[in-house]
Length: 109
Image 1 (tube, rainbow, N blue to C red):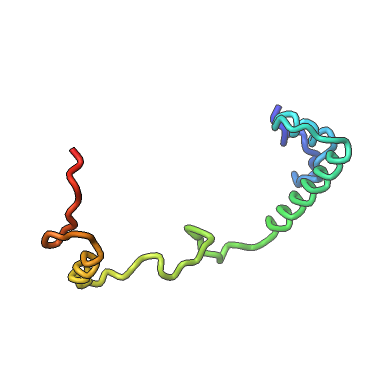
Image 2 (cartoon, rainbow, N blue to C red):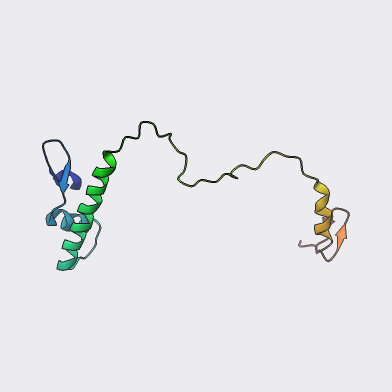
């Protein structure tokens, strides 16, 4: 039986809460060793999360456009503008030895 199937449900299929047994079962599946006081803390925290999710489920999001990401970046795609490639020769001046448009490096093989 799936862990979440053991949650207490009311007549409208809303999650009522996580019990101490649920926390112990989840901790066992996660291979976590919990102290007695931690069980109550996690039970409160999980119930708070479930209550928050229940609040979110009541929101009307029909008019909200789907998003690709939660991060907004107006400069995500750079404009396709031609660039003067001659600026690369300025970089070559920093090298120890150049041959035309290339750095001269010692032979490896």
